[in-house]
Amino acid sequence: MERFPRIRAARPEDGGGIARVHVESWRTTYQGLVPEEYLAGLSIEQRREAWRRRLEVVDGPGFAVVAEEEDGEIVGFAAGGPERDGTHGFAGELYAIYLLQGRQGRGIGQMLFDAVVAGLMARGTRDMMLWVVEENPSRGFYDRMGGQVFARKLDTIGGAALFEVAYGWSDLSALSGRPVETPESYLWRSEFFSGHEHCRLECWAERMRLTGSAIFLHQGLRARLDYTVECNPAWETRSATVSGWIEDRAVQIEIAVADGRWLLNGEHCPAVDGCIDLDLNFSPSTNLLPVRRLSLPVGGGAEVTAAWLRFPSLELERLEQGYERLSETVYRYRSSGGSFVADLELFPSGMVRRYPGVWTAIQG
Image 1 (tube, rainbow, N blue to C red):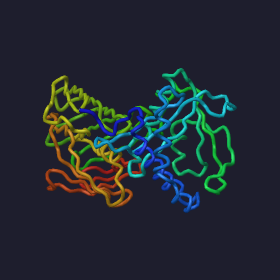
Image 2 (cartoon, rainbow, N blue to C red):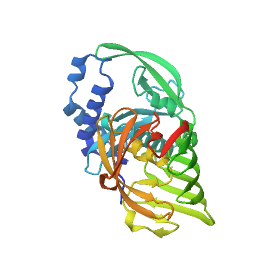
Image 3 (cartoon, one colour):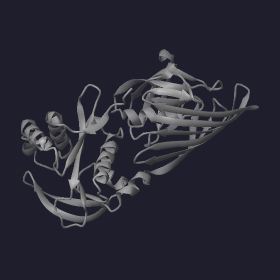
Image 4 (cartoon, one colour):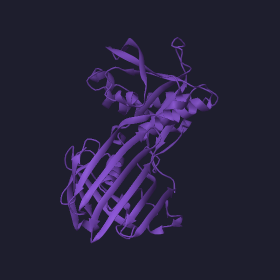
């Protein structure tokens, strides 16, 4: 089962979808920076033809990739190739990267960025630069990706004088191991499980990881469970481990997910095939995964189905869940057909601050 959105090479027939993303992204990103009449006058049709002609050049020096949803909708694109100015000492350049506003915050931008880096490296290019409007609200993405500002210039866009800054990466091979967010640690006290848990969140360009330890007493069972959960940049679970003990029972679990197929200690678990998120019954940490993956706007909601690792059986079960974003930091969570409802208070990272009656963060 293929995951969406998928990143693939752009084709000439994608010109219309790319043009729509290009124009809509300009209108949301540069509102207030560029005159409204200029933004209103941007033509999707003109850009469609320009992109179609550009993509028809099979052996051109540049290339483009798109983010495509399952229904064929293009929601983002990026383009790169040889550095165009030739005066800054970089061989490669990221020409453009745009993503519809409603798809931001889901890791798709990182996937597009990584695809351009991979494309440049496949062409023998080992460094890269880009230009971005200094006041672009998404500029911090390039800081998180480890880019270094090395130049600044004045440009005119739609009659508005705007400064642009240049970011550079001198070694593209280093991007694969560079964190894109500062690692964060969390410590919870559990009223429901009578214990404590510590978790660490780490994010790199190509993967996300949760690492934690839970020590608790529940249903008369003493337990210590250490876990790791690995996700791709879109916050989709790819693998997990759980080890430790429950009373005198040793625990050693390995979970793997590929093409929607779930394995637990090498055994296929068809009941949870097609699930995207892993939910550890004994931990609040995995609520982060759908929160970050969905990136809901305030007032928005979504239904998801998680692969639920239930305590104490530690077997995978299918669990229908619902998330509704009530405010910037509060989500209403539902499960078990709506019979269980809780309003989760979250940290800005999306990690649980307070899960009423179950977990409370004492440090984070």
